Structure formats: structure tokens, C-alpha cells
Image (spheres, rainbow, N blue to C red):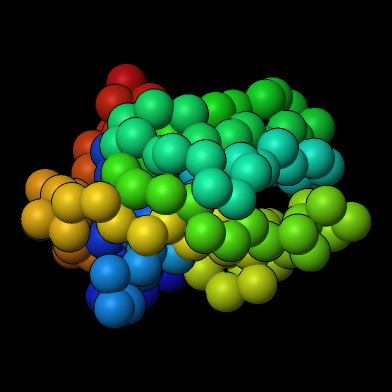
Length: 132
């Protein structure tokens, strides 16, 4: 459910880092909480992304949510397939449901993100808090 090769933010975004480029998206937990995703607003290529700031948004039948960038850098590619099929995020949030690729401006930033086990604990804590 939470791949071990990814990095995770507290606000439920993930980053897969390869050769100084981060592919980013929202986590299984985030898409599950949102429900059926019906629209995605993506950044434009060449836009700057700043860690912790909105990169775009996703709209579901339940709500609209900002997608905060887990890393800083320049957007070099977006998943235009989501324009016609935003439900790809629900179907495969770590594969065909990715949102954008970012050329990292500070690769060291990634170290401050959570690894899979830490993120699992984060989600468990949130789930327990909701149950109270």
C-alpha cells in the first residue's frame, strides 16, 4: 500500500526520486479519504515548485484538496493523461496516477521526508485520532 522506495510528506504526497528528478503524486491514504476523483488541476511545465506549497489540486465527489509539493524545484513534466481520466489516481496512485515530475533544486530536501514505515505510523496515528 505504501511502496518502500518512495518518500512521503505529512500532507500525504509522495516522491519517487531518480537522477535528481522527483515524480510526485498523492498517497493511497489521500485518495481513499477523498473518494472518487473527478478533476485534477496540474501545474504547468517550467513552473517553480516549492516544498509545502500548493502544486495543484484534486477534486473529488467529496471535496477539493490542494496538493502540496513534497519537494522544491522546476516542474519538467505533468501527467496530461489525468485531464481525461482523473480516476487514474484512484486506480493506481503510485503508477499511472502520478501528477508531476520536478527537477530538484535541493536534493537534500528529500531527507526530511518520511520513509514508508514512518508514513504508515503517521497514518495509523491519524486514524486513531479520528476514532476518538
